[in-house]
Image: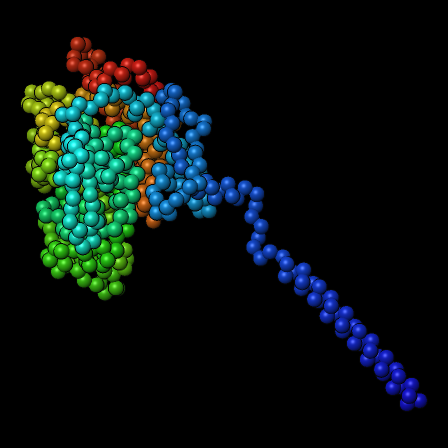
Length: 539
């Protein structure tokens, strides 16, 4: 009996052992199949295309008609030789809210179409030797080659450079200086623009000193290749409007206004503002540690929350209460290429005929005399040549960006009165988007005179295919600071379209006035005969 019980117990134990082994084998098989499954979710079809689009470059195209968009304008660039290289058309990755990316892509197409339009590519004769601002010796004999080289001794932080008459040996800033002519600072399709902007955005800073003069803080930054740029720091948030109770001459200067002014000037086809790029600067490493300016060095301090700050010395807003601070060390600012030294290319300063009184109570003469322009037209240099229409060009630029602070302008002395105006110092632009300042347009209203090429480009920018706000948004998206935040808030872009309509309406009013007066002076200055072959934009 006991033997049977023991045999039955052994059978039960063996059965349980076999069941346990079977369960373990089953679990092992299940675990093995799970282990071989990929950890990442498979990418949906077409994801690689989206990644490619995030690095798309757009090439310039020629438009066959004023309202005809290209059908094949996207050119892919897969080289990416240098991660820091600044591409022509910066497109943000498509992973961030695809609607915005689609809008940027569409705007970039409009910008490339605009710059490919015949109005921006009119044929021009070769530039005579005397119409270049600066020239280098074109040919150097072999025996003289060593003595003709521009050799600079190596200094701390600077490169030991050897520049000769060959343009390929010149750094971008020098090529920019040598490309300035009687009529513009740089050509429309300038191959030097990309390396120049790259230098501003990423080149090592070896020196920073405060620029003398002026009402607000600005620094002169130097690069290892001896290039220099004007730095204006961020003083307030980009979308912060100017206080309504402030007078125009008491307003802050804005770094993003300097950047946006350069882009707008280029979109209008002027090319009279030196190239400007945004940049994040390390307050300690790139300013405090490299400055040789003792007065500037004494103004650095650390704020109670640990931010590195400084305030410099100037007429306005240079105190601890108006200090410029990093976050904690990173400081946004604009870097504008410096023009040639005055010892090489002297500039003449002209007082604006429509200069404001800069008084809180007194009005200027042009504000009280409706026929004021008649006097200006009889006064040199506005009595002949292009000076008046060049001034009107600047007025239109200022009205579009709401800049009331144009009290003076400059020209290169070498070219006399027959040259373009430099559109410098635009830091007080783009202060308000909710209000337009009609008084800025007074010269156009009183004189009723404008370049025909300017008028045609303005009409082009009013069309849906090339809308000013869209191409401006696209152009600004190429700036390095765009990855931090848009350089202009959307209300500022909307204001550009609204103000453009006002400018065109003013010209239209002048045309009607001319018809009523019969044989009055033509409002259009015919600046080139080739415009006759360009179709007038509709709208």
